[in-house]
Image 1 (cartoon, rainbow, N blue to C red):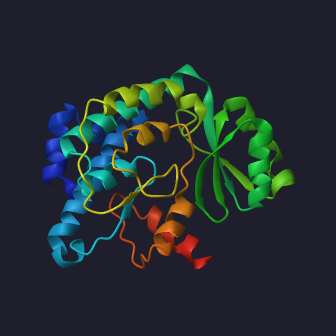
Image 2: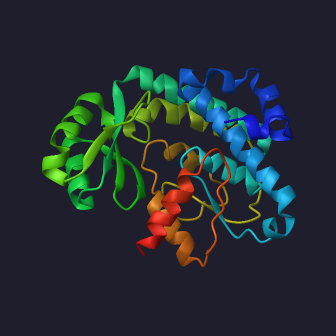
Length: 260
């Protein structure tokens, strides 16, 4: 993951601030994976700006999937990079700790009927944690309810259930302890004016002038990624550039906008 960005100022400064190398401990889960992804995302953004300065001047909006919101807010100048490194580390640790407090997990529902999947989530007390693209919803909540959703998914919704390898029920009310910790950390940092709008996962609309309360709340509610992409398209955005490891989001953009 980090090979293309080793030596980049964002990665080197991030490692200094963290006091550990998250790339050496990715197999230990959320606590180290989130800082690693964040550093790669910011380094990729910096690299793109250096290589494509004319295009970088034309950026009209940004969005990030879950953790990606922090890189997007750094890119827009709302969060200082040094502050964001600390926030991401605290967010990751808080989510990992919250996951250890409650037996929760997540399951992807692939294909099937959207309304039926949402109805199943409601019946079982689960949260639609990710609305990623047409035919791709992720449910989050108590482990026993997730297991039941897996058992009945095909019959009740027509979807194929795939359990995710995560350490907790992310983007659900079971993350309440993490949201409280993150809110406290957010209150200790300052925010600046945005150079361009950043769209929030929780509302699929632009963050306000002070995104701190909403960032904490977004741990408790679903990532409305499909709706965010549609909102960006409605705002006139025609070209999307992904910054970070992999190209998963690029695939979600193509799948979502092809359905419009």
